[in-house]
Image (cartoon, rainbow, N blue to C red):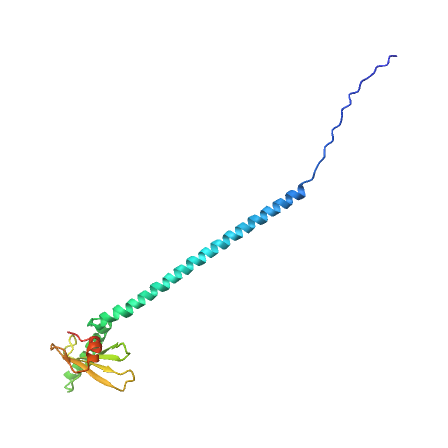
Length: 195
């Protein structure tokens, strides 16, 4: 028998080393997610601070505008009213009440009840010292559109002292009733006579 030599091919084995990076990769992923959360938190905090700053600025502007509007109303609106702008809504409503009272008086007159009625409307202004300046307008029942007599006086802040400043009858000129220069300079311009 013949011996056959079988040559076996023997492969040389190569060895591989397997390293496990799972834990390292997990740690890196965790760190990256923490950084992403921190960045989002910082961004949201920055937006909140920006929003607070904007709201604060808008609040300051709102208060400033409100203050300016009140100053305008106090300084300019009251000046216009005190300079004879007598046809205000309040004045008109008072005149309509007088007109209603006039109608009632006419009904009584028609029943031969003898009396005369006048109606007075008062307006008030204040001097820089705080003393009230009172202007009174007296109307006759026969003419509620034009006062037949007007007078203006100063009442001290305590209410104890009154000083007549000026009077005006129907279409006459204003008659100054005082020699006191303070009353003429400061109080007389606050008298709201109707022409």
